[in-house]
Every structure is written in C-alpha cells, then in structure tokens.
Length: 444
Image (cartoon, rainbow, N blue to C red):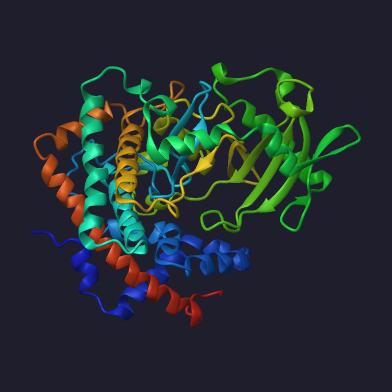
C-alpha cells in the first residue's frame, strides 16, 4: 500500500521538514521577496501569530504535500474538476449575487484551479482541526466537527446528482438558521453609501478616493495605463451582465499594496466609477488586482490545463464563474504591465465568516453542515455565463459515482486526514517560526 503524506512527514526529521517548508514558501513568494521584502516580512509576521494564520498563508506548502499524497477517491474525471484551491474555514462568507439575493457561499478564488475534488475537502478538514484545537475542543469533538461537514457534503452531492436544478440551490435568508442566518441578516444592514463614506470624500461636488499611508495617488502615465487596461476589461464582462455606458465612467484611481496574509505585496488599483446614475450615492468602487500563480498549479503539470488560461487574471475569472452560481456582475480580467489582473467590485454587501464568537457545539455543527453544502455547491454548479470547456462533464454525477457506496469510508478518510494534518500543521508552525526568527529565509 502506498504511504500517505502523513506517514512520509512523520518519518522525516525536524530539520528535513523545516527545509521543505522553507523551500515551498520561497518557491511561492520568491519574486515578492526580491521586489517587496517588507510586505512578505509583514505577511510572515502575521503567519507566525498562530497555527491557523500560518495555514492560511501557506497554501503552497499544503500542495507540495498533496503532490506526495495518494488520492483514494478520485478517478480520471474527479481528479480534474474545478476546485477553489484555498478552502479553509474562513474562506466562506456572504454576498449579494447578480440576482440581487443575499447568499452564503465560498469566497476568494485567487487559488482556484483544476484538480482533485478531494484537495478542497482535505484543506478544509485540516483547517477545521486547527479551529477546534484553538477553541480547546477535545479530539472527539474535533472529529465530530469534521464528520458533520463531510457527511453534509456527501448528502448534498447526492442531492445534486439526483436533481436537474443544481444551479437553483443557494444558502439564503429563506433556508438558513442560527449563526449563518444571523450573518446574512447583518450583511443586509450594510449599504453602498456607508462604504463610499468610509473610502471616499467629496470635493467640488464629486467623489474622490481618500489618500492615506496605504493608498497613493498615481501619475498621468500610470493613469493612462490603468484606463487602457480598464477598457480591455470591459470586453470580458458577459453581455447579459453589462450595464449602461454611464456606469463605467472613471472618476478616480488610486494604488495600494495588498497587506493581508493572502495578498501581501500585490499591487492593487482602486477605481471609482460613476455607477448607474450621476447621483453620488450610486458611485461604484472596483478593484483591479495583480493575479498570482495558483498554489495547486505549482504541482499540477498538465499542459492542457496550463495552456487553457491566457494569464492568472483570466484563470481566476474563468474559475470563479465555473465555481460560483450568479457571480459578481463586475467580475472580469485584463492585462497591465504584462501581468494578468483580476477585476471585481468592492461590494458593501459582503460579510466574512468569523469563528471567534461561535463556541457552542450545536452552533458549530450546524454551521459546518452549511459549509459542507456550500462546498458541494461549488463543485457541482456554475454561473450561467460560465463558458469554460476545460471540464466538459457533469461534475455532480462524476463525484457521486466515486462516492456512491463508499460514503462511510470517505467520511472516515476525511476525519482521519483532517485530525492528523492539523497536528502536522501545528508542528510546521513551530518550525516556521523558528526559521523566521532565526533568519533562515533568504531575503528576510
């Protein structure tokens, strides 16, 4: 029997594992280490704060491990479906979809790619083990958490496979309860005006983006480049989602550098648009962000997949439309300075899933069943404007085929992996902190 990646890691010395961690992260962030070392230094500081923060920022390490693992529940089809690529416990949230409904779904598609559907489940289970450990839950409770999510995923896939209305499914106000319903209700309170008031100011009867230490003005040459890239972006919006020409009038542009764990050092342009009317409360803010190489693509070497994408901005958009029903109507892509860009709205109607105040086991399990449903949905549905041809088969049928009759074995495999990989990550975090504080990363 082929050894699992857990067995391989456990058989390595701490010194060898630390070297593996350093190499995986340098491979992923080496270019940014050279160009914006301060940003990566800040990213690593945040990753050092906890095992979960480290896990969030180290998707490249996870996939370096997955390249050495054995996938027992995949075949030719299910080893190449659209995956979110960085599916951890905090990459879920609420948003208003293109149909005007508030929904709870997977978010953040920066790492999306084509690969084994089990990779999304494994990455999620590892994060759940870390969440449970951080909350000081028992091993039995952590296993129950992972089991609840995995069983819900299996049940939802089966339901999709038996239904012709897959794209109609969504977690909304009408069919949710508990903490998830509360999060959806809170999202309803957010308004476009409040977002505009926070990020913009009014000068001479018109809006401008507020400048601060993180947000900078750009010169005329860069403004011209951004406007050219913006015009190219407009051609990538599906015809049914295009708005009136007035909506796309540019009023202001600023630049910043991403400073979160996931987007540290990445150049981001914020563009203020006129919106559907000249009324100032209808102004729109969109983001044009440099798209990075997807972590799964570092270990998936299929040239047919690699050649399918024009650049990483194109990859991200095609992937999101393949994974998300009713995707952002502003979603599109372009090129700027030879780099692929992801364009999307800075929406006021987005709420992030946060675990700090979710501590009762009943609340946790109910929410995890929702996460299982949401994960099944991204694997089994697509936006109506998705025009991808890379995965030309029914994914719900393909996944159900490999799971059918093996549901209990699959749930057990996910529980075992999540529990064991969570322990690996806690050890990796200690090795990472040791390497970081002792200056073992080149360039830091």
